[in-house]
Image 1 (cartoon, rainbow, N blue to C red):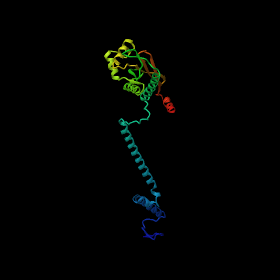
Image 2 (cartoon, one colour; image 1 turned 90 degrees about the vertical axis):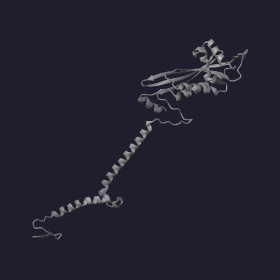
Image 3 (cartoon, rainbow, N blue to C red; image 1 turned 45 degrees about the vertical axis):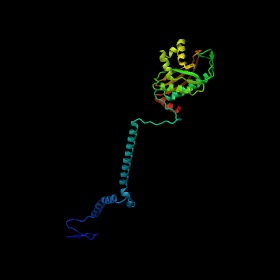
Image 4 (cartoon, rainbow, N blue to C red; image 1 turned 90 degrees about the horizontal axis):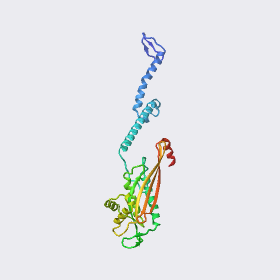
Length: 290
C-alpha cells in the first residue's frame, strides 16, 4: 500500500514509515552535495565574476596569495644572496678621485699616515733651510756663495718603527725627492748617482759622518763643477701605547739636512697618531669620534 506525502504529494513505499525529519535530513544532504560544486565553480570562474559571492572562497584565495608571496620573497632573497656572494668572492677595485681621502689601514700605517708626514716635513725643512744662507768652498779658488739652486743628496731612509715599510719605503723616498725637486731654491741629485757614488767608494750611509769619507763623497759628487751643499737623511720612528686590547701608535718622520761644509744639521719632523681598536668598547667609541 502506498501513501502520499502530505507536502509534496509524492508516494512512499508502505514498507517505510514516514518521519517528519526525513525532509530536513534530505535538505542537509542536498546542501552538502551542492557545496563542493560551488567551490569547484568558484575556482574555475574568474575572480571578478565572483565578487558578489566572494565570501565562500576568501580563505582559499588568502591562503594561496600568502603562499605565493612567500615563495616570491624567498626567491628574491636567494637571488640577492647569490649576487652578493658572487660579487664578494673576487677582488674588486676602483679608481679613486684626486680629492678623495686615503683609505685607513686596519693593521698598520699606510697612505693616510705617510703621505701627510712627508708633505709636512718637506715644507718645514725647506722653509727653514732657505732662510739660512751658507758659504761654500769652490774647487778652483777662494770661498764662493751659491747663486743658483742648492744641491741636495738624499742618502738614506731609515726605518726604526715597529712596522715594516714594505713597498712604502720606495714610495716615501720618491715623495721626498719629488718634494725637493719642486722647490725654487733647492735641487735634488739623482738617486741613482748617489747610489753609484757610495758603491764606487765602498761607503755606507753611516760612513759619511766621518770627515774624510764625507770629503771624498762630496768630491766625487761635485766633479761636474757644482759642489754638493747638503746631505739629507730621513728616519721613521714609532711609539706604541697599549690599553688592554686597544692601542695608539705615534709615528714620526724626521728629516736631517746636513751642511757639507759646516756639518751643522737642520732637523725637522712631522708627527702622526693612529688608533687601533680591537675591543667592542673601542670600536663603538670610535664611531662617535669620527
